[in-house]
Image (cartoon, rainbow, N blue to C red; front, side, top):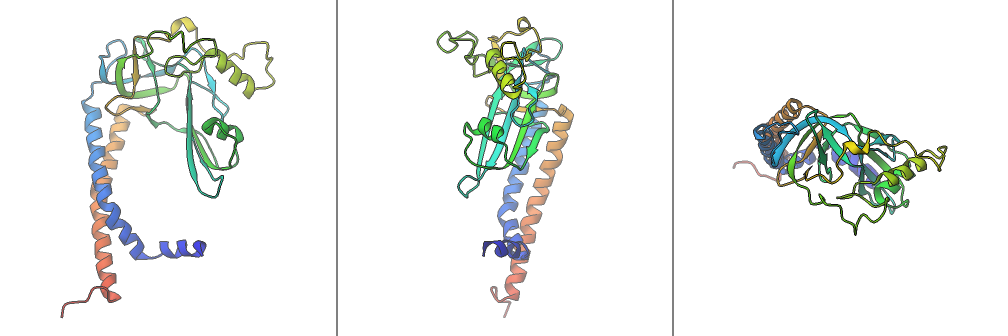
Length: 291
């Protein structure tokens, strides 16, 4: 019964009219929020890493790090990945996500700043998009191999990627090495960055042909170039936190046309929906006409 009902419902103008009345005001308010974000981005000063002050900041440079990890779906070396998996283990759709990060820095030529990407809005192209069963991807994203993914998307930041960052530069809570947390070479670093020894294990697991007695070759730069416990770090604060491969101009332009679309399209959809409901309602006798 459910199969034929959905196509029939989608073919009814009244259904779309009701949606327009409900979501039109929502889109209108969302448009103003996007416009507010656009103005906020334009007001935050763009800076170099060396000249960045504490607080909200815009930075532009290249992703860098001392070593890489392996993305589970695309099997590529990266500094950070985030994966979204839509699974259907018990008949109901379940959305799950997972992320993993090696020490991640932005290098703009004047200096390097550490980035903790948790909670960031990613505006980067996906590195993998699949609709079949990806056991390794599901295990990485959900810590479990149970269930069958219906759809998965993976996003990666690789060494050398050009990035535009909007975030909060603040004192690093992990500036001092914690001897209780970092007890071995396999311990996570600071906020949870993968250690080089763990990254090496991941590389060997992804490439079984590698000699397990030898390093996997995941290092991409000299560890001496990077301070793994710096005094400041760029991360999510009270304002927006965006990691994008687009330039500042492209991000602002995208917010501009999206805000206009929502601000003008929302009321138009609501008015059309209301008109459609009134006219169709009168036609079928729900709303009697004037005597």
